[in-house]
Length: 572
Image 1: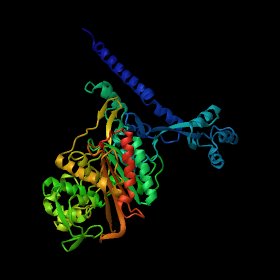
Image 2 (image 1 turned 90 degrees about the vertical axis):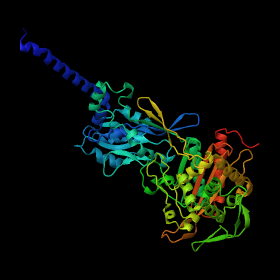
Image 3 (image 1 turned 45 degrees about the vertical axis):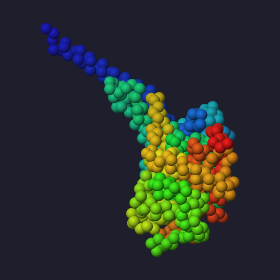
Image 4 (image 1 turned 180 degrees about the vertical axis):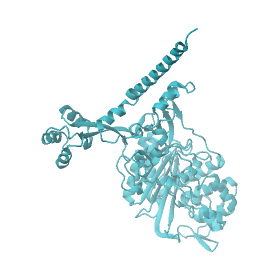
């Protein structure tokens, strides 16, 4: 019989072997997996090492019409020039040699920092070019070092800034995190701060339940957007032109594919560069989803659609236009106050008649009118994958006062986000199905796996026949009335409606007499819509109506999109 000590020997040996394996794994993890972090920590000495969230973060890509990826947000190496005053032999000579390579170097600052003999680390300059960095390294000056610091980089500058968001410090913290836009919405997915700890490394290394392809990166990766960069750039250029020409407070635009809800472009001005320090906080808000406005007559096609869909009017219907109507002791007038007598329903869109929209609302009745409002999702969030989306202000309809429904029928008295109204109006271009706006097309995980974002066709809101009827009416409006018929495209059918809304006073007592919000919605080719476009301009100066300010940029966008995507004509 073996002694107890003989039986314990294999057990003790096994324990030491296991300890050895764990130490080897720890050494491998430290030297190979996170060794670069320690190397940078040593190089920086007294500089605080930034967290892996900043050092390693997923990218955000646009995708062009051919499927090529274009970087919207990524990482870029920032080269920092630093000195160790304890190692500098001749500070004057060191400065002179560095100054030749980097002329922006300040002598007074360098001299002060080089004189701190007890401090082993002082930063002298950052954002050095790759050429300057190579030249400084080649000098091999004692006490001079180059630190490489990965930073968030936005190659397009202001391109899609409100959508992308930016990185910044939250509260009084020292860790940068996603702020605003997609950087905030998908901060956890883009961040890799918690991807590789020693504990998770060991757990995943010895796990028998996790698919090997999913190890280490299952919750992290890159975003690929629906945004087409050339379309985005063209939209932003048009917005810049509108803002400059009409001195607007703000201007915005949305371009989407009504059949899929994919947002090809969305932008607002003024904007910001997410790669720079933000000084004007007011421009960080995305007004397309975080501001609500009374939009005015651009909403009238939905009122007409509700009336047609419910069968209370037909395309052959008419009504008597007295120029104004009295409801709940309030007079509601057409924009010009002029009576037109008996007019067909088509003229409600052609001449943007408020009394005609009220006529349809009354035929529907408040309950049925509100039912269609709810179907179109008006006043609700669209569910877009961006932070801060607001609901519209439609609470006055709960008062059940008829005048509130009357003003809502032509887009006053209720306030909606631009994206909410653009999605609702795009129902007309989508055969009567509600459009769900999408900005993320795919998730690309660090494992290499790719997951498509779900694109679901929305619920049916109105009959397809109704959508086609309203489309034909809007095409007629463009062909015969908009800009005197000059907005008509010879080879394409375009459906569109403008809106000019009064702006409420700040005290809530009525409306400003001389301030307006202009809006424009259209889609094309109308027989098989590929694109919906929504534009708005707040308080333009020198133009009374949206047809004056927004028809030209809409036409430019329509011609560009049809040409860029080589869409076949639908008009012979």
